[in-house]
Amino acid sequence: METIISPSILSCDFANLMNDIKKVEPYVPWLHIDVMDGHFVPNISIGVPVVKSVRKITDLFLDTHLMIENPDKYIEAFCASGSDLITFHYEASKSNTLKTIEKIKSLGKKAGISIKPKTDPKEIKDFINLVDLVLIMTVEPGFGGQKFMNDCALKIPIIKNYSKNPDLIIQIDGGINNETGKICKNLGANALVSGNYIYSSQNPKEAIESLK
Ligand code: DX5
Ligand code: ZN
Image (cartoon, rainbow, N blue to C red; front, side):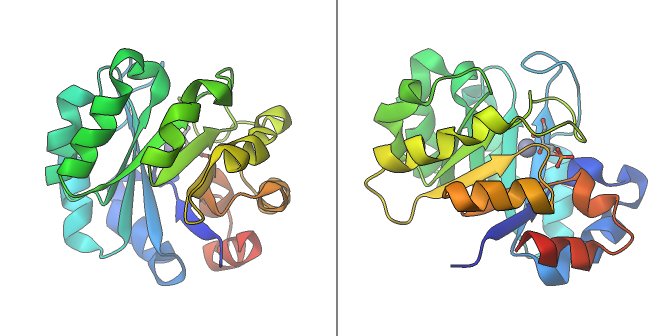
């Protein structure tokens, strides 16, 4: 199966968002939307109204990454906004993880669970067979353009080993370029998020092809 490439709109020029989405749209199946609340991460990005607007201008599969405290409070709104998949952070939902997953699924969306660099994959072992996607962060969440942390990629085979689902999507996010993407693929990842590498390239199409 071809690696699912999901360009992160965090690296777009928000005043020219449609234009920047159209630059990648013909070459990818997914679009990654980074939602940050200034609490779970030390940065504020975008929210529901932007997802709604993006939904109107593209048919790409919208992969929404919630880097927010108390994700349960906002799941209905993000599902209604047109997201196709909602990934929440395990660290933000610890006592409620099962309910969070059930809520996303009951609203007819795919569910993803994400872990930060310092979180042991063992902590999410019980949830891996209940979700569609596991997102492994290879930078501290909060900003685009950071350096890939090699150690975090070693979580890929561990997650794979816990999974009984041959269709589980193992997605890697943070510092992905042609070299780090290859490391992740070789370790068993089948989906890559990439912001800075794609959008700082003179030729986003070529950058995307190099990730595939
Ligand atoms: C970081 C975000 C990432 C980020 C990826 O908190 O979750 O999706 O935008 O950007 P790059 O590819 O630039 O590291
Ligand atoms: Zn992300």
